[in-house]
Length: 111
Length: 119
Image 1 (cartoon, one colour):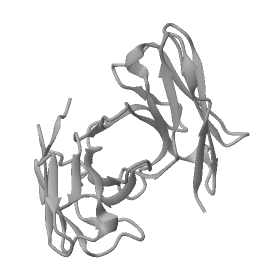
Image 2: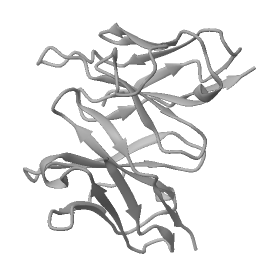
Image 3: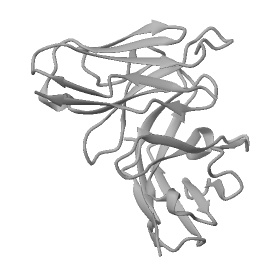
């Protein structure tokens, strides 16, 4: 089974400042079809998760361009260029290359 | 507009059974992969089961042999039959669509239904 490990587990940030979350997989997420199926989700308190990014760096419909994704193979990063109050919550990376696995989540909170 | 609405959660004793339903609108369940994902109180996300219209089904090891995913195409509904429930099955259960056409991602989620297994 592929294990997804996120760092940090908690990230206090200042409004207007950038934030970055890392995600590492226990094996390469490059699929035999040439795609890398790594997505990011955001969950606000009391809400269901919502999709932010898929295939590493493609923003889902309606996601602001302050969010960006990068990486390859086993190492991936989600960046927020300027954190806004609505960005608080927990961020999960998820692989769907081989079955489905979530990272343990990174809690983003405002300082 | 795509919507998913779960129902059927509640308090159930260990060893009991419960059936969750997820009513979809804005798309057809029959032509999509569909899934159940759960979240224990204060914990992260865990995929539970996935099904496709071709009949293929997948289960996490933690629920294999106890849970059964199914769909009712006439009602555009996804279900999860949960048997032999354990305390560790306590969680909010989310229904989600799994899009495989463009990127293999869970794009739409319901609000979730809480299952509490306790005596």
